[in-house]
Image (cartoon, rainbow, N blue to C red; front, top):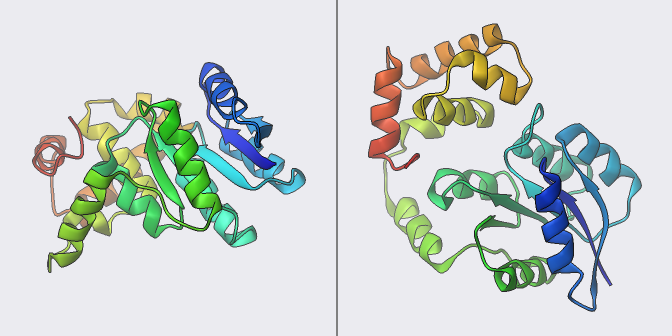
Length: 209
């Protein structure tokens, strides 16, 4: 039996994942969590074979949870699920140790295929994105956003979508002042001065749509 833990802040998504997974005779959802801190606690006390992890969680982000898993459970396969386009996050999470990246609008069969592939020791990404990765690896120059930490990158994309600093803070469960500090770091690292430049950059590099 393949034992699965699901982590997503939306109960309806967790319910949907459970239904899809348990239609397979050899798969079972053994536990679930709605935020990063609960996920860490549950993973510590629940034996499992794979974790399905949402990248956008309140407070501790999915990438931060991934770092924890890689530190304490280096061989535990983790499939990242996200509503964000692959080109925005997939390369980053794979470098951080994820076993695969799957869009939330994928068909159920693709989810099951992804689980089976990473359980077997492989990695899962879409064919279209694998071509994009190869092109990026062949490119000699690094993009400015690759200099950002995972949290800085997350906040940069939220700023690019027009979210106010206060609203970003509420989503991430941090103060507006802390978000402002992150924004300053982002501007410095990317050699920019305004949010408009962030928006322009994100659109040019297709980090937002």
